[in-house]
Length: 284
Image (tube, rainbow, N blue to C red; front, top):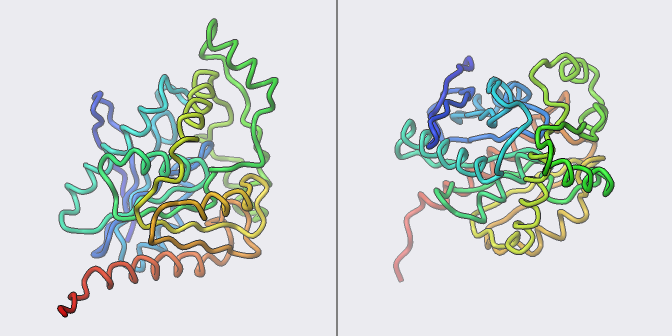
């Protein structure tokens, strides 16, 4: 199915963009990473769509086609509100269908943060290389400078400390992201302070997820700390959780040449849960 472009309305009156791939099956709503946009997700979404899923790639406020205030946010909770508004919109378009919230890298961190707040709950979480625990971060001096600048010049920007080859070693996609004019390469200190606050708030509640959750990790990741993510996963409260490492893949796993194992894992994981729900209960 060819992708289409649309917009949904948020509670504060903004219109935010999304890409959509229509289908007969369950719905996957995808949150992109800190620098990227829904366009990085298109080939992956198309393959998920071939399995029958309805797929939405949501452009985060200040990212992708949402040109206003690029790389800036006043309060990180606005992102969580936007996710809830998107889920309301998607559910209204897909009445009766099960809905799964997926996120990659920082989008995965946002998805987990959203799940701990449990507003409009999805039917499950799919986290790809989630930046819950990272190897790459701003150094303490830059963080201190960002805090100081927040008081006098909150719109001052700092470069995101990620090199292209940390995302992928695939030359085709390296060329793609290098030429992506919508890519965000810097964040305002207001945004950075929001990240710091979000991580501080998240620290005390980060294991309280009770939704079904699948964590997909790349075998070679220079951005996410897989070992610490696995320790986090062990403490997650959900009774229905799965984790898998995809050896040979790098951080942005959808950028690999062969992503069939990734797509098949997600499709099978959803199918198993939906089969269990649809099976009639046996009365004793």
